Amino acid sequence: MTQLDQSKAPIAEAMITHTHKRTVAFDVPGHKQGKGNPMLREFLGDKCLRFDMNSRKDLDNLCHPVGVILEAEEIAAQAFGAGHAFFIVNGTTAAVQAMVMNVARKEEKIILPRNVHRSAIYALILTGAIPVYVNPGVHPKLGIPLGMQLKDVEEAILKNPDAKAVFVNNPTYYGICSDLPAIVELAHRHNMKVIVDEAHGTHFYFKSGLPVSAMAAGADMAAVSMHKTGGSLTQSSFLLIQDPKMMGEVRQVLNLTHTTSGSYLLLSSLDITRKFLALHGEEEFSRVMQLTDYARTEINKIPGFYCFGSDIINGGNIANFDTTKLTIHTRGIGLAGIEVYDILRDEYDIQVELGDLGNILAIVGIGDKRQDIERLISALMDIQENYAKEDFGMITYEYVSPIVRVSPQRAFYATQKKVKIVEALDEIAGESIMVYPPGIPILAPGELITQEAIDYILYAKDRGSFLTGIEDTAIEYINVLEV
Image 1: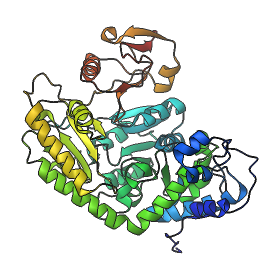
Image 2: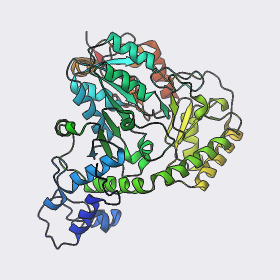
Image 3: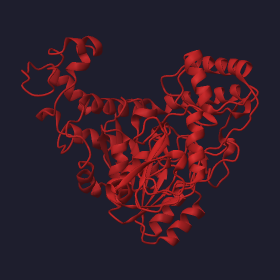
């Protein structure tokens, strides 16, 4: 295979060339490179608005690329070790939905862990596919959902030999990895495809010594959030496929939900970030790993906090761990993660990625410095000294086992009524509800509402978690099916 030049950024280069032309713009966007909106130009800057362009001939078209976008896709594919790479500007949600829509149609089954992102559940609503959930299990101390054990995936496959695909998180939000190569081999042996949510695994492709990437493991498709740990602009991602012969059909499915007005700011950020990581990713992520290793060591010296790492690998539902993830268990100081999250933000001006009922997650990336880590460590020491209390009455689980009564699509479009959440026992949910982030549903459309789910919702609400997905923003009522 001809090696492509990773120092090129075809989209960005074409945009720079285009701005040097004396083109009179009688097309969109309406701000006309910022000339029409001085307030926006003052806020974003002249250069940003000059590069906010339309799909002109020399800039190609995202929906049907034949020029610089296609060239950039081919270079990106080689950087990721994929058969082809699609530029995504609708967020990784669009990539996840395209994957599900490609492998499973109405009434067809797909095997997936319950700790999937909301985008996967919404993809089931769009397609009418039937979920077959594999219980990822919960860590007994940390209360976080884990990976899928190979034996559980095999059991699901044997019970559902007509399933079309297996969906895998690689890694989870918390850095937990399943045995992806073994799952791929097992699924392919049973003529099932493997699709992978790698929203938090961009760095797996650019740094040795980290868990295996989806493409290296032989998975059929992967959705990669370049903006999360790669450093491109928010909402920009890649959809990777193993077999380049699938390119046409996958693009057709992708175009069902992907925008026809692709942002060239997002496209160029993907192009330039791929170039940067292809050239410098190994050294950059080595430095990130050094920072997280240092932070983990220092935080574990603080009484009551536990920052876990590779020590939790068990060869089963924790087959591997992403050591760049800095997840800190907080229950040892008697505080829920969301409480520590709020204290860090409000009292120390430190913004971490999430706080759940027992943990906080700090994303350490290529832009972070040693002094940033020191500031976090100092704040945690201060919180331990000034806010610690007895661990009393705190819920220990993070996973509510789903009981699917109706397909998500059928439930979503069914006739519904509103009931109080506290009175919804044994009803069938007509909508999703989740703590965000991480966006893993507590309930999804079509599932039986159990007392466990009700208790978890009320507890999360009382602790200050951001609950979303349901129509009632006050989180008092939920839509259920009329039966």
